[in-house]
Image 1 (cartoon, helix red, strand yellow):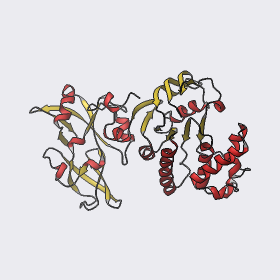
Image 2 (spheres, one colour):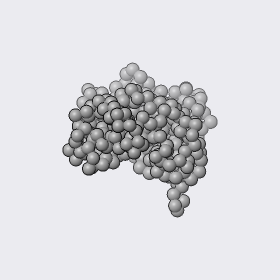
Image 3 (cartoon, one colour):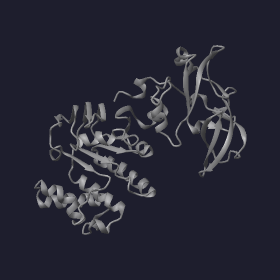
Image 4 (cartoon, one colour):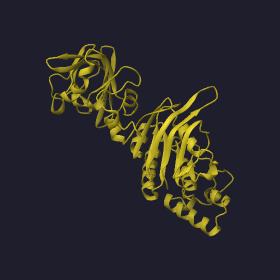
Length: 378
């Protein structure tokens, strides 16, 4: 087990395409860290540089005290689990799990013991004589995990290992992965495009976009205090709502004013936003911070949006309300028992303490969150 340290790590492909840019990140010893972002954001490239499957153009990567830039993949003391599982179809489960140890000339007795221990841990002891074609997707995934576990590496690398599983099995398996990490205490770097998967698995999550780390922090920190508009819109289901407008000052308060809406921002926000009064900004509000009931944290006379409801989706104990405010399309996630009719006009109330204000642009900075608090420094 060891830290994995990236310092200014950069990958530039032929033709000048940037795969990852100036990655500065320390994955702590025994930490489970998740790289998350849309396709092409650089997360898999970053993982593959650790594995030695991509050359590093600039910068360095250390595993423990060892610089690994020019170390062969087989000598890096890491184990990788791929999206495709990459099992040998002609070998039994036992031979698949033992193959790496056999190449390294471990004693037969030790190989047998390690495979038996890993198989028991993963609940596949009864499958050791089968070949991959006789296994379900979930069982193959466990075999791939077992092959990595028997290595007892300094770090595990996971490249979207659950993406081939059905929804129910994905939920079950990610809980098993979390429990497995608690037992093994092995430094783990996990790549996924699924932000829900990232939130549930990671001790910290690293949100990437266009090859650059946007934010690195604990899951709830990223959710509650996104450092910019991209992070705010990527993390959360349904995603955060955005409305363009401008900041104005009135009666000692700071207000956001947009199409058919005017909202007073709380004093805690106002102090940070005073210097931006008169400028164009983007207001952000998460779906769960809206309600049709003017009570509790939603009881504020200056927090009202007049909306036109288009669609209501029942989700069990909650429902998603799709609506328009001028040209803005918004979604509110409310209690299922709130009485809201489709194709109706009504008022929605916002929890103004939970509002976010961003500079314009795809990665516009959250004006209410300092970079230090948000965890941009990884």
